[in-house]
Length: 586
Image (cartoon, rainbow, N blue to C red; front, side):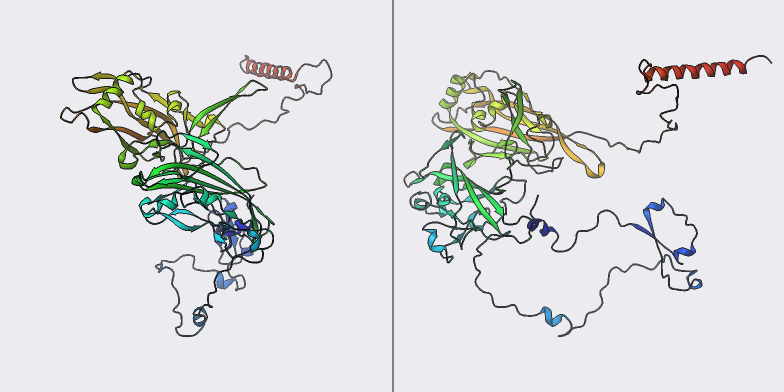
């Protein structure tokens, strides 16, 4: 289904290599016509008989060198001549003077996507003034966001399937937040308006006069709870007193719908038909720098039904380091048939795991992801005073997992409801629940919290979990495929106590620990041999003819099976008669 312009990228540097090993050949010292038979070491189907020097006289070819013991000196190159001879001078020609690049009036593979931030496009019908390339935040060598990375036509970001987003760090201390966090005018660098005010050029029409329609959707991420809510409009502001930026872009998803003028042509121009911009905005303090920004650019053909994009972590087996696929069981009832349909609501970036936020604090928005085959332990802290610890232990006696629930609010309910699943294979299909394994949960239901005033200690606190994943391998030893065999999530219980020597108004850090362990199932390979051929010669289907009655027999005939039984009985009777004759007296 790929356009020819894309497929030629794999062959424009030469032809594809032949598949498989080079075919064996047999060389003759004499023309093959002089040879009557050849005793090959194996089946002749695997050999090509090749004549050697057929134009030489017969008697001069009775002897020839088949093999020698000369040492192999490897590949050697002849000494090329020096000076302005041959290709030397041609290869050293000076390049032509470089002219400023011109903006193409149509899109081709990898060409820059152009836009205009403001003003009327009508003035651009005969020129390209005021156009700028579409750039996105992209991690530089230091991981900081580089805003000079241009988007190419049909080029996704990120380019691989291991990560759903490209993530970079935005240093808030290096920005003028009064303008970067303001949605006034065209919008500051950190606001949704900075992107939604862009006018994307389609590549159709005269020059750059055509503009692609843009659809915008925004969700707000509550930094305190981690909850996502849809909003119709946002106003980004900066409070210089508190250092708070509101409604700044944390996630940017750009989906471009395109079409090609001739899908079968190699160099056919393309067009941008429509754009979808999806933002996740949040609030961030200047003191909590850096701000992590996630960016994704996707290209989808306009006329082709678009599938739901999910991460693939192998084909079919998992690839070490790629996400451990995870999702939540979802079900719906068909209103017509009344039957229940089930599927997996797949988590985009795989199995989540809490990670420490700013200064190591547990935050609902600080979530990492489990990589297949990589053991990981993550710790974050909760700061409580003595009174806060006492109040938590007393008022939340029936909720010992309060803080675990806070940091994993997105999947906590699914865990305790036994609806959390992991993919058995790296390419598990979310529409087929048979390719997914339910995560077993240990340590739930929880007990109640207990508070000891003398020690100022709270017992029975749920302080995290350990996800244990058993893995194995399958199929041929030279092409092993890794899979998940079992997953068990073990809640961990601990004691939080407040030292007596600390002042009552002082706070102490209490820790939540989350870990994932991959356990390899011990396996032994088995020798698989080709089945032996049958020892009994296959019998023809009509061996019992005429005793077998066919389906086309006249009405009233007995079934074919009855005819077979009669024939078998006749054969047994004949064998018995022969045996009696052999033992009869002479």
